[in-house]
Amino acid sequence: MRLPSPATVRWGLLVLLLVLWEGLPQTGLVPELFLPSLSKTLVALWAQREEYFDALLVTLSEVGIAMLIACGAGILTGALVGGIVTLRKLMLPVFSSLYAVPIVILYPIFTAWFGIGSESKIAFAGIYGFFPVMLSTAAGIRTIDPQYILAARSMGATLPQQIARVIIPASIPTVLTGLRLGGALTIIGVVVSEMLTSSAGIGYLVSRYRTILDSAHVFAAILMILLLSILFDLLARAVERRTLVWQTAGRQSRPGAAGSSPAVPAPAPV
Amino acid sequence: MSQFQLVSTRLTLFAAFLAAWAILPKVGILDPRLLPPLGDVLAMLGKQIVRAQVQEAIGVTALEVVVAFLIAVPLGTVIGVAAAESDYFGQIFKPMLFYVFSVPKSIFLPMFILTFGIGFPQKVAYAAFSTIFIVIMSASAAVESVKADHVLVARSCGATRSQILTRIYVPSMMPVLLETLRISMIFNFTGVMIAEMYASRTGIGHLISNWGENYQMPELFSGIVLLSAVAISFNEAVRLLEGRVSRWRT
Image 1 (tube, rainbow over the protein chains, first blue to last red):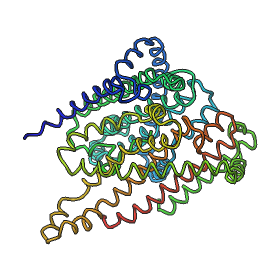
Image 2 (tube, each protein chain N blue to C red):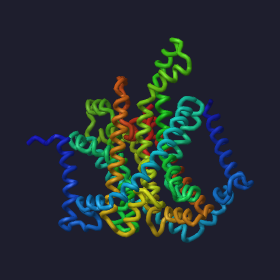
Image 3 (cartoon, chains in turn orange, green):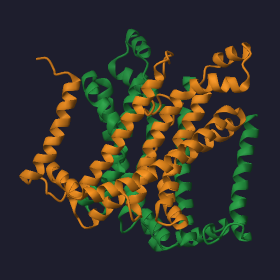
Image 4 (cartoon, chains in turn green, blue):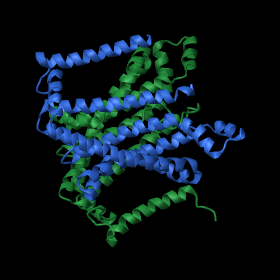
């Protein structure tokens, strides 16, 4: 017997998952409190759509500002750390040691300093997203083929020309990977901090509905966050692919798998 | 710069950071109510660590971390090795794992609370859940790091299956496996911390979030200093070991 193709099995599993999500609670095998059925979740989402939409706007505005901070500061610091040899040797080991500290334990400090409004979320998520952006920018600049710079320099390119024509285009793929990881982390950072202490946003809805044991509304909010992070991931990957077109040089193995490419940092735990 | 200079510069910078933390709030350049000076924080740490309530919280947290680790790592390794060794299995699951991997795990925390309550099982289940995906991915990376040439040479020299396993697979996979342990411990620890900070009655994460809510800044900072020190020491110890076992590779 021939086995079905892996892609078919994958889609089959996804469909099975959705069917189970609908079926298990309906038949009473799993209590509705643990897992409200898919249809109930969607109905709950639709019934409170205005509330969810407002919360989404709050979350998105926080994510947007946090991403601007994380990407701006991350690219700037990463370029410095990656471009200046002494600074890189001095600082990179420090950053990889600090990576062991769960950033989430710093969140109480942010609420104490900035209050429980948007400011503390933006600060927390900004720091969450900053590290991957900074580390990948540094890696992107460090792993540029020295031949490119040598060629540009021997043809008489000035430093600004080298930066604009060689260093930036050659480091874009790695930097974009960092922006994708960092962007995903800022979304998570905002949602987690909203879940912990806040008064608005999707994460706040999750926590509020959980405390009153309204599972359908909790799952509706979870579903929204899932869709948000998957959408962002797809968008970021599409941008990455577009900019990769001209890059014919063999790219290193996929980032994320530990040990396979030390140039790109492992994603942060959440 | 030589290695010595690098290390000494790093230590100087670290000392300067500590000095700034100790002095700036003291002389009033930074508000000591927002950033208690280092001396006060360390004194508070000494005071807190002898309290029975704090010791109990540390014990609970440590147990949660260990149990979750013992569940996630063996289970994840088995799945990861299976995904790397069997082509069919791998083709089905690897793309899915990449997707699951990029999804934030913390949003599932409420599900774990609805299912397990807010006690010990929920912390362990959530931490194991948030760790297992990185273990799976690293374990399959570890299997793939075994060089086919090495296996071929061993086989043509007449090595048995068990010899290939102990002499080729284990030493080749060792550095990556240790890295797996290190990174999964980071994930695991973070998982326990988030779970405790989110909803809990005990544990060090619960204490930290309580101190933050009650604006007890010296207590809060002493907890953070303690946790950071533990996390960094564990990480560095495993890294040292990693360097040892991978020395033959170069």
